[in-house]
Length: 390
Image (tube, rainbow, N blue to C red; front, side):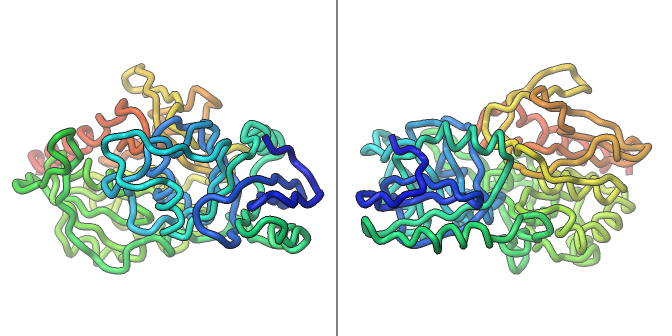
């Protein structure tokens, strides 16, 4: 176990350097080089490949609190995007050889091929406590030859790295042009399916959409058309959708909202059923007049308890966000539907006069439990009811 130190470690092939000057030495994993970003931690015990490819992690270095990362290897089916947006990763132990029938590649090799820089042999509990007590901060992760780290340069880089506040990162991970999506969720022994008989059409605005979210939409019976984050209301409505979906994504919602909020306001006025998650939830809140703020401790993990106030049920959810909607800023006509049982953070709301609702978490369960899959069915029923009533 490597302890924090401000002196060079000649045997170390990797270093994690925080903006406050704290240094952790370890062994390099994945690609070589230097990466900077906001250091965060994720408490999931499974799904590390889905986490590393989640576009919502753009600009971040992920500390995995679970000690056994890499032991099930990687494969080409569990990718949430083609090119990972995360900057780097921190592990307690070096990955062991994979033991899983679906594995096709070791984590070390997969991350190296995608340019992801990692460090192992770090006391991740200490890193987590540091972030818990001190709040989020920037860091750099370095991987190179033993004894060659320029510690002062790494400290300077960590201190100079830009904050996520005020950054529109959705634009960096969104698609560049519209495309159709028909793949449905994976089934053991069958793989992915195909939606060949859609009952309605959904336009999904891509602020950093995960593939399994699109699969879940298609799995409800939707013909899915994905459009870029910068699509106008005219662009979206030209597809004649029955429903509109606002995806997850990274960065400061207020920054993305500069161009997204005016579009969302126009879409709300059409009366078409609209469903937002994660960044989409935050942007919907901004569109109706609420505020967002940076959290002292983000929610990142697949073990987050949320209460659905409309049913009284508690669901265990998968989450990844460092900003939140200020619940007290919701206007009249916006009703709170979900709250976090960890810290009472607003986790969902709906409009009482429009078929619009949103949740802060990731209901597609990649990674995470399937407790929240009902939300996609709720969206589908809302669309079909609206079509019937029209």
